[in-house]
Image (tube, rainbow, N blue to C red; front, side, top):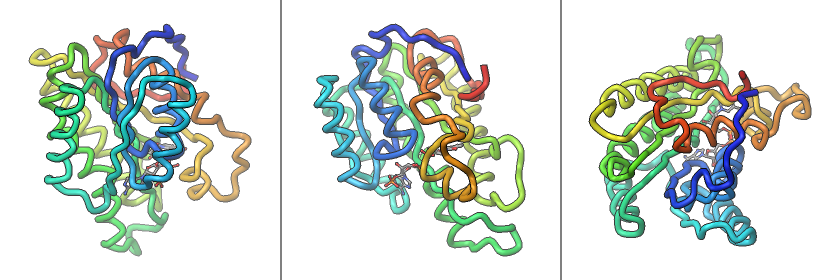
Length: 248
Ligand code: NDP
């Protein structure tokens, strides 16, 4: 496991957006960032789930978050322009962006892969990360030290039979991360890196590996050290790197 002990005030005063914040790793990352002092923008498609995370943050008396319901499957330029405008009006800048939301889709060989599923997966996992980052870059550049984190996967580094669009979207996510990292290098305080969570106890993992005993996998809480490290200022010199949450 990646080892990092974060100071309690690591994210104090930071405004951080997490996509897919209603469940799985995204929910736990949002709660963890709030616990370390950040004001969260909780983005997801299910308002009820986002409200539950909001309530948990309030109950703990961490900084008051904001909810931003958005279905990435149908989102386009205008939605991300509106998102940027709302953040600008409410907060004036953005210090952190965790691209976490993803769709797995069915595992099928390329010879049988439906175009419609391919397009949906690319839309949620890749196209939205591109459009959202593009529209939010001006606000990220206003931060003293901004961090953009992309979520990758083992199949984003090595292709595997049947992982189709999901795998290809994660390869492309690594590429997008590297390009942004290179473009911002030296011209702004924005850095971009990726995290491969590794097999983690969530609904997505269970649907990919139905025969696996979830108890053998680490929980989202256990993989948080690298999420904290990359979001905080102690990693400000790290740019364009791919991290593995479960490797030391
Ligand atoms: P989950 O399926 O548990 O959570 C995915 C999140 O993305 C949910 O909050 C989900 O919302 C959201 N989401 C999905 N589609 C949309 C959409 N159209 N619009 C808005 N939000 C959407 O997955 P994990 O927590 O396991 O995965 C988190 C990230 O980690 C993903 O990027 C995944 O690829 C990656 N990953 C996970 C691994 C694992 O073993 N768990 C291994 C490697 C990578 P809702 O709650 O409404 O469904």
